[in-house]
Length: 633
Image 1 (cartoon, one colour):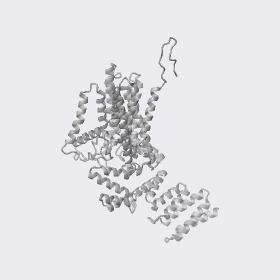
Image 2 (tube, one colour):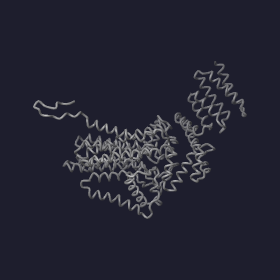
Image 3 (cartoon, rainbow, N blue to C red):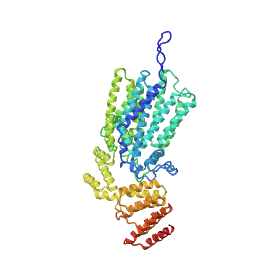
Image 4 (cartoon, rainbow, N blue to C red):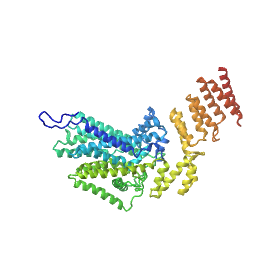
């Protein structure tokens, strides 16, 4: 709605801006960033599960299924399956399983959706930071600068792991909760002059969201340091403006407030450390201090810190298993150089921080968020791209502040260069995502860029085992020849009584689930077993038995025919056939289909009479049942 451009006295007045204009503009920028984030990931829903923890977390996880009371009890009491306490992480998998089952499509759709949402949340965090700590003038530049920083984060090739990897779902969920907690914490400072109860509500909300992030996956353990640095930024902001820097109570109250986030942080950290010490069927125990001493851990941490300082700016040769830190530099020259550069930059920014306080705080925030990702308890350690998930947001903030702090033509130049860089990163991310399309593309990538013979041989063996365990023997033998490994030995480890190991695992899990009356999950695993071993009669028979017990006579009969018509692998006995067919026929009869029940019994009796086994007891039992049905008609 516009006002007249002139008053009665001829004085010109400015038009009234539409209500909610800046907020509507921010929503448009957030939507733009979310749409851009989905561009390189448009093919991700067609990706498969990969042999990189998806088998442990999803494919062969006997606890996984739709949410239920029993499953929630397991989620909130388990800390051994992944050597982490991640109940909300398991819950996120469970929710996706409820509509996707063992199909990878649902997990990949969820990952793309989460990436779009988190990209918009990154924009919201950057815009909140710029509005509070950015330049006071040129407010119109804040959304574009925040959008550029968020696009840098969203389209960076480092995000490929969490987008294209089904198990990366937990990183997306944990990241969303962490970003929301930062937004709530910033909001608590916006209402610092408001009634105390209002600030407390925002602080409690931030603590709850932070706890949810840690209980999904503990990537945000270092976020406590970021909260403290936000407090420091508030102190500096207040000092520059001559305002009271803290709420009533001063520093003491602010530090007491940190208990809201410090308690969950320390609790999850303690549980994680304790769980990490336990070995399992999939995870070896951590190295003892006698083998991996204090200075070796410090050396590895310093080099990992340095890696995450420079690698995001030169994201080439990326792999989920970087071999850069498998062997530490015995002379320590590389570690010394990394320490000098990291500590030197920290000291320089701290010493010359007058006018550059924001840059110094961002640098400290980047280092703080990375602390849990430095592999202090892991050997060998692979500094994976996904470990930079939250720390990269700090870098994105630096990009956004650089644009805002530029002046005049330099700001336009910074935006132009930034857009070009973001587009290049987007193309590189799409190429990196392609490696996550299947186990074949992923492990080929790991092997090609390994740069370490031990890694190369280990992942060749994993690749060969993957194919033998799924019955793709020709492919396994070809890869074994290529790698110079013993195909027969690996094939023997990947089969059970002539059945591919993956099929045997699915069949075993299906039986356990059938006994627990988990019908849907059992059928998922029976189907997976038969997909990998089509001629294997046993899972087809057990599946038919499950369906018959559930009263689905038509599907049970279909599965029964699959069991008896396959190749003679683990032959189904006449007595077992008689028990199952009797139950299937009873199911048809009970649903008012006596003619179908009679036809089934007649057919099976003829087949039993024609077999070499010719079990008269089994056939006679079915004949008695047939006569009863005929009499009832």
